[in-house]
Length: 578
Image 1 (tube, rainbow, N blue to C red):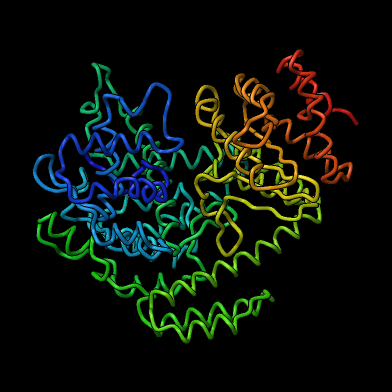
Image 2 (image 1 turned 120 degrees about the vertical axis):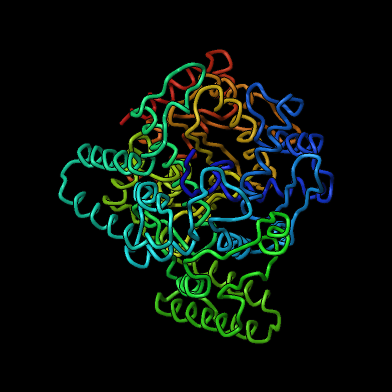
């Protein structure tokens, strides 16, 4: 069964790989058998926010959960060595430990992804005829085509089987763009992308027999086979975007297309030059390959491993900060950089400078949005519609959803401070979220607003969002002397959520020093709220009064008798009042 080259689709985020690796650190050196698999599965199941409906840490599938995690991303990245069950010790490699302990994990991820190649002693089913290095292949292509969409990656990039075919793929991408440019209308363009994708996959899988994919006696015809493969390739493209962005070498531009980060362009060039495009030859010994090559830190070098290159990078950031008129005290940072002898700490100083650089750009970005320009207002509302459109080509919808609420509250303005859980690139585009933090904390003059947003729906929404949202708002309440309110926004509200939040608000908690007040609403209602604030030029005092009118003590007493339906319906009526 033929497969393209790819990166693991579970867990979806490389940052989740790291979080889970930390959970199993103490299992390093244990015999790898079913008992260990069960223990790994148990720790993953007990992970905060990971319990799913119908599953628990006592589930009979725990050994599968453990195997499924450890033999996917951690194994591919070379951060663990996994022998056959009952055939050796489970080992967290040197780079695995570095990933767990590193202050700036992007250097570790970058190094590991740069080593991944096909063929490799780490077997990947269906890839016997592939001969490429994924990272340098994408760098080479991006140097020629500037950026890549998810569709282009899934059609033309992961179907490259030999490094000698890279130039052919570049021509295909440019030809595809020329044809797409001539097509007018979103539906027609979407149809063309789909037809091109199916045609490309029909060529890629031309020697595959769909009948071998039969399940439970159900025949799979060629059309159904290619449709499934098209969806699989989209998932692979999503995964490639996520893992490659985690290296720090790439970013998503405004159009959700992958491109090389300007700040780290020299790092990408260095890997293309030193590693090249042609895979190395290794002995077919997986243990030796993992422990001596994939798992070792210095088995390949990065641009930042050389002092001269660190100095170049530092000077580039210094010049860029000056050009953009960012108020960074580079003289003090430069003195610290020059006095430091350790290359690793010099790297940390550069990363901190990058973070400061991005932070100041974010301040400018927030300030511009708070000017409440019509174009920004329209763009925010349009982006919500794009996210909710099932056919849109947005890569990471939950990430973009959270980002758009960040933009919306930045637009509303009148805040002393806005603290997103998002991390951003140098162009103020979102990279990822920080786990176990509220999506947004907004500090106004008279109160604090904790915002949590989700695209999940139904029972999953109730199971995965209720308790964490309550806990985040409660903890924030403990940390501030001002009144604290929570706002929970979902695309489609589960019927249990209003009951959950209204009943919880009735209780004067000891652990959170009083009532935890959270108002749930659907995103369509948030749109009305957003529009009302913009058109009527309202400030934060309107929000304060609004939350008090539905979550204050007298309001809670009123709705204790009237119930959650009246609570939500009265809120909707209030939004419609002129």
